[in-house]
Image 1 (cartoon, one colour):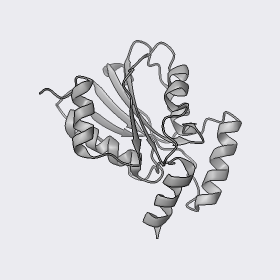
Image 2 (cartoon, helix red, strand yellow):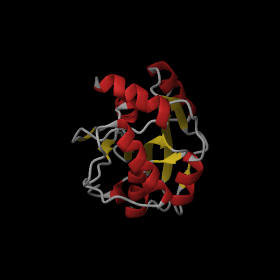
Image 3 (cartoon, one colour):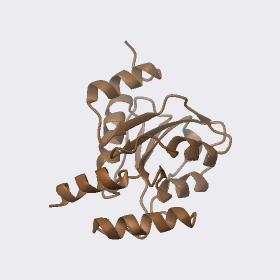
Image 4 (tube, helix red, strand yellow):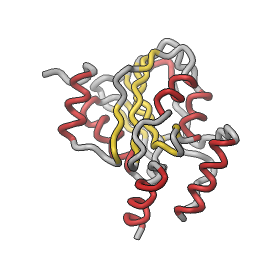
Length: 188
């Protein structure tokens, strides 16, 4: 039932992505890379995990203190209100040493044409000045809309990649690897 609900959510709300796992794992490959993401339905999480497998670095799930409702309509209503009010929810998870990262992949679902409020909280909480930021966005049919533009505007002093990943729900591993080659993270 949750898979069906998640599919409907992705298609109607421009995926919300669901923060569920408590995972911060690292790899010796590219230790100066952080892959931070917020996910409600699991789509953005899946992409973050695939990027982590290909690139290495540290995988970090952005989680809020207050969870969103499990019911689709209640979640969409809450998200719309938060976005309209420019609300930034309190975060439960923290990056221990942001200074150690030179590159930060930031993943968000497209919620109502922009990034999820939890991602806005993440951007407000950390000084990413001088870091390379690479957005990856999931959507249920709405495309990029203002997600990358809004993320860029909130990322003061960042070097935001001009090649973000924008994906309908999930992406194939082959397409993701092609994108990572294009932006210089996987060598031929």
